[in-house]
Amino acid sequence: MRISYYPGCTLKSTAKNFEISAIAVAKELDIEFVELSRWNCCGTVYSMTSDDVMHQLAPIRNLIRVKEDGFDRVVTLCSMCFNTLKRANILVQRDREKLDKINDFMYLENIDYAGDVEVLHFLEILRDDVGWDEIRTHVKNPLNGLVFAPYYGCLLVRPPEVAIDNVEMPYVLDRLFESLGAGTIDYPYSTECCGAYNTVSNPDIVLDKTYAMVNLAREQGADAIILSCPLCDFNLEARQKKVMEKYPDFHPLPVLYFTQIMAVAFGLPEDTYGFEYNAIDPEEIFKKARERL
Image 1 (cartoon, rainbow, N blue to C red):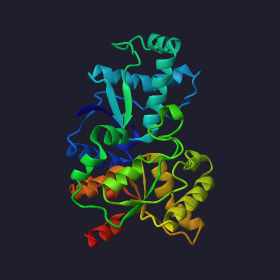
Image 2 (image 1 turned 180 degrees about the horizontal axis):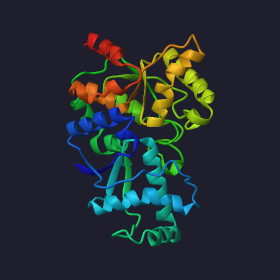
Image 3 (image 1 turned 90 degrees about the vertical axis):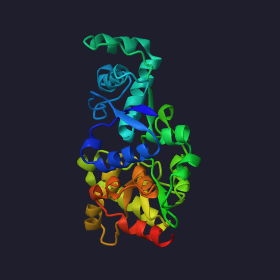
Image 4 (image 1 turned 120 degrees about the horizontal axis):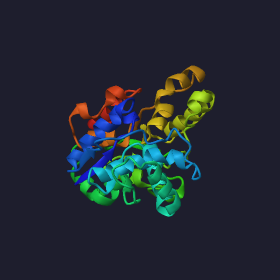
């Protein structure tokens, strides 16, 4: 399978471990990510209110690039990029007047956009195109004995029209864990906001949330929190050092992208794991799994 791939900004900078592991996992599953020949920021830093047409230009321009490259489907890894691209796509699919305004403004583009690109998250590809049974056939190092906390955050399941799974009780990550041989916990914070950009404007809010969310995951027996959003990763993983300064009783817990645990389970080369980019070394938890083999 060949599919257009939109990386977004963060996967080229602070979330390289996400991209490195995802591309390796995709290759193992006979999926070729064809990175867009040209792309720009998805626009997530701007307002995405439906009446703010100007700020829909960034995501729609990327969807035009998908068509220019000869594809009608695009896959994303970052939850923020997925949410932004899909929301903009739904808006212009439902509102012809706004679509015309956007195309008129971008008159220098080679083609007009018609709302005909399908925006997908990699988890959807794994579930709907590959399937859990097929994933099981690629597992060489089952993650036996490991238990994970599934963390979706806001952007994979809200608003409902962009959700990749059940809004109230998503389970795609749970199914992935099972296919890799790992266990899962019933995690009440799985769709809770991580604090988002409050990490800049009001960091104490994020520190308090991270303290509560990580502690509960550990108390319920999780060896790590697994997610798909670079901003959530920053707040839940990188901020743990600050949490320890504020709360002396706090103990760190690894946080990984779902593609990293897949790379380990598939027995891929260690340089595809991207552990060197993790703020908290997760190697110890995988030693537990190897000891149980």
